[in-house]
Image (cartoon, rainbow, N blue to C red):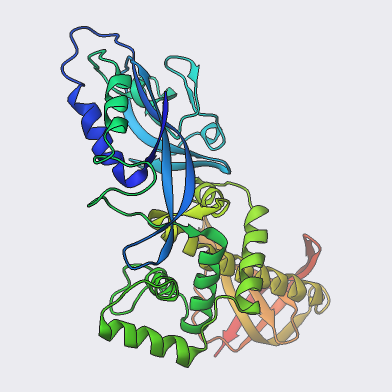
Amino acid sequence: MRYAIYEGNMERLDKKMARIQNKCRKYGCDFHYEEVGEEFRELKDDNGCTYTARFVIIEAEGVAVVSGWRFIASVEHTSKGNIINRACDIEIPERYYTGQPMCEHCNSRRGRKDTYIVMNEETGEFKQVGKSCLKDFTNGMSATVVAQYIAAFDDLIKGEEPCEGCRIERYIETEEWLRYVAETIRHFGYVKYNDDGEMSTRSRASDYYDFNHGESFGPKRTAQIRRELYESGFNADSDEAKAETAAALAWLAEQTESNNYMHNLKTVCALDYIGGKHLGITASLFPTYNRELAREDERRRQEKAAQASEWVGSIGSRIEFKVAEITCITGWETQWGYTKLYKITDEAGNIFTWKTSSWVEDGIKTIKGTVKAHNDYKGTKQTELTRCKCAA
């Protein structure tokens, strides 16, 4: 059977379930208890403030059996993809990024909210298993009885509202949260979480969001937030915040899931609502996006500079020019010692290369050398030099 439980009451439910999970008398019981869905509802707190809360749809029936491999990660299944929460530094195979909540141990497929990744340390084999199959032992007692028992007592768990004393997890519409982050960065710059001496972007944006949605702060912090919002002209509904958020999300949609971070970022940002544990990773969208824009600008600058490069001098002639930039791009061992390859750009944008065993000091202003060859590297004209002399 299925039940809708406010997520803050899940800990209470789990404890009830745990009480019937005594020592298993034999391996192979089929206990089954898991989350199979979710829904979001608008609730009001004691101060009359409206907030979004998450309710968990649970399924309780039967029993489950187990395997004993090493636990690697949990997988949170969402409508937009899976969120990987690793417990170690082992990279998770990409097939679990979008995999269905299938238990590869008992070969059952249900509407699971979470599954778990285990790995055989001897063979390196990965498996995705359900909550029940993750346990080594269960006693075989029916979980249905416990779920029915808890659902029957309104004073313990009420499906329509949080029970007294439970932890209230508030959810934020993802696009709105990103607009708060974008506006925060626009006025205050980006500050990483845990940077000493300065409030992080995640914390500042969270305070501003909570303040604008009726959250109570102490008198001092309330006055400070009100002043900061007024003096900066903070407006999460501004055209700038909307445009920046839309551009960042459009960029993210085109990115490949090259690692666990990019996979998680794409998955979380695709959700309609996020809780507190996902505020940090969603806030990291903008510095990631901005760094890529900066790299793209640099690539375009280099391409433009490469197109401006022309061959200089005739082969065998001696030339002299003023240096705009010089970089050692690689080096290798030879039978005569260590050779370095320098890339040199003059003030006109022409590109030169020079292979030498000499170390070039900083502050070089002019170079005089002999033209050895005129080369074409990926469409860029480069003049190869030899027997160069440098002057500061």
